[in-house]
Length: 432
Image (cartoon, rainbow, N blue to C red; front, top):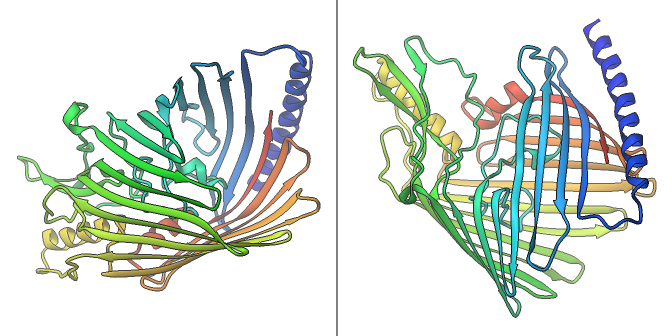
């Protein structure tokens, strides 16, 4: 009976969304032909994620995007989102200022200041050079971009010939959200408030990137120095000998490079990153070892079918196998903390070899598309699959359905994600 209520709720929501879309279209048409100092658009959507026994997530969300028209010296943009979780009725509506920034133009220089999302890298979805934008691993959404978290950044660009030099300053630290928030700790161990860097000049992060953009070749060299967007886990004991687990971070340096080019009918892309921790490794391994990551991919189109195939690799320097010192509870929990940190940083093996595939088939005059994103690690035997079918009923109305599936051996990240996120999903989205 509960599922029947949900289906009726979706039908009601879709009807309401359609009416809202018509209202927005009518409103915009009354101003057609007038000069506008800004544009206003956004979307409203409803999503259901469920497996065969339970509902994972049910929510309604609206987004409003406001952008002023570009002038000689700049413009501004802001995006607000409101989301209501239907499964948790007592939880208030979540208000999220996703992005809000000011663009300034001064000849060959331009600046973007404010809350923003900056994505580095030319690989498809698996970007070792993308160190500025944290990720929320607990988000339920068919759109991969929704997992990205914005942060306050002062960004500057200088363009000359075919080159562009980018400089970024991130004064406030924001960590990725990990899927451990509901993990049951042993008796006598509690979660404590995270220990993140203070807001001061010496704790801020900065990055540089030099890009070249030509007709048949794009590439860049980059450097990041700041606090790692992936937090680690540590344990502390208070005066009463109570044990607490908390999130912490460490400072790191990343030297990266990427490129994309064309070889005949194929596109070729690559991305590389060498990461060095600026702090000494601790017993909890919340400070990871230095590593070298790389992604090599090709893409090709055959009419309505496109394919991106990638090889993703990683080498961990000075790798050592974990060992349990003794059978005491303290030693066993320390072992688990070390294991969790290795899962967070994907450093459970000296070498890691994975492949990703993304075929996309467009049909019915591009109104219907079938996309499958797959990732498999030959080293850890972890698997992620997300097939989804999208149908444009009109230019503004989109229906999406599919499955997200994580699988892996015990004591792997995908095994943990699968327990909370494996589900089928359905989304109704109307843009205006």
